[in-house]
Length: 348
Image (cartoon, rainbow, N blue to C red; front, side, top):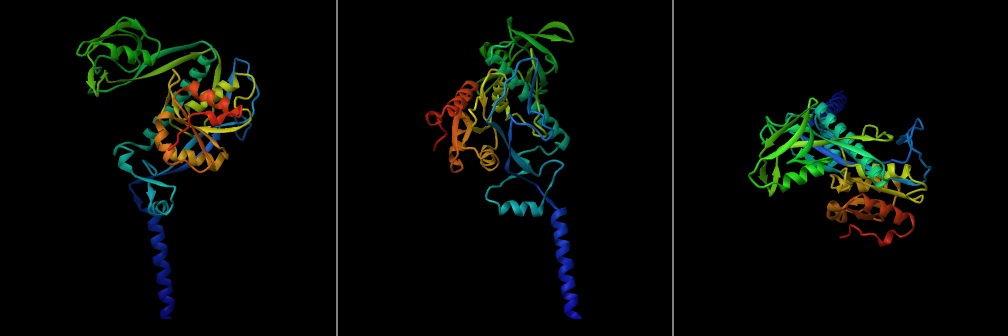
């Protein structure tokens, strides 16, 4: 009788501990390899990931994989004790204090909105890059997306202002705005011409200098008008880091023949409207995800991520260094032609 009670007690205590392990959360975030998604592929409803209307498209073969990172924990999605312990035993999991990733007061909704906005922006930038490469018309407006209340532009520039000129020089891209601000004399005001509510006005902002750069304290975004309608379906993936792969996919859809030559190529990298490939986070997990879900031997990585990539390259994966869209396009063409071994690598 006594032994039966002991067993029952042990079972109840075990069940309670298991329940507490699921209920009690810890302030960490865990990152692992996420799936690789073929931007030249189709979803379960046979809808292409990249759809184009208003221009002739061409059939293609092969795959261009955008790579992702899987995240556990974070605002609105607490990490359980058991998940934390499982991550401790997983050599491919990365455990990071939540405070290193998210501000204390940020909500799940805010994070999702930011990721969705970043993804939408990356898609627009990617389309702009591909169409410009093809010589198609791209009309761009530079818009103030946010104003830092503690920086010089506060009270002068406003969200949704359309910037048309800086110090009298017309601007059509974000880069032109940045370059003209950097050229202005230190300590001197910059004249910023804007359209606000349909009315033209000029405001003066005296940039501050930080780390050798002139800063007004605004975030700017681009609004594009294209002569074709491009619809990119990325599912629930957020963030800007698929931009380069989207640009390659759009370019392939609009050009004869298969850009990849039928091969499987994965990669990552944010992209600017001018075609510069920017560094991203989580490249170690993205390379691992490429190997696990796409069975590729080729991976395109931003030049500024090369050191980290070289130190953690999975066995059998050849990581190619790219700095801009032209590098990426030529890399894919070289791999397609069987000349990939001549490409610059991220090597230790």
